[in-house]
Length: 99
Image: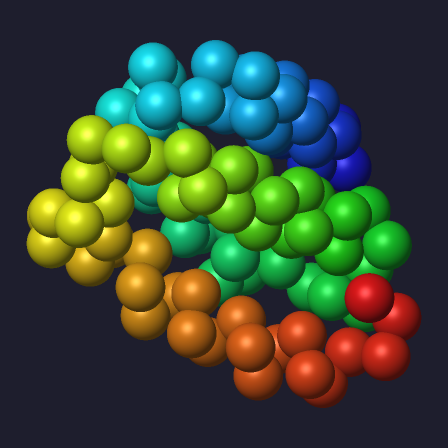
């Protein structure tokens, strides 16, 4: 539970970071891709804290995608790491009535 809370705080910061600094920091997403993928794949959406973390990770990635003006996410090396996991989240989100 402690690790989940720490990650929740980190991704909360990153969500605002990407929102406020926009394209200047999009490339910093490199440092979170592995962890974000692990969270999205492993989150138990029936657990409230994990569901909140899952949602925050998606929001953080969305901010990074939205403000990508340098085609960072166009590179297969970057987007390829999250593409499959993100499409899998559509099924998971649809199966959860508590989102």
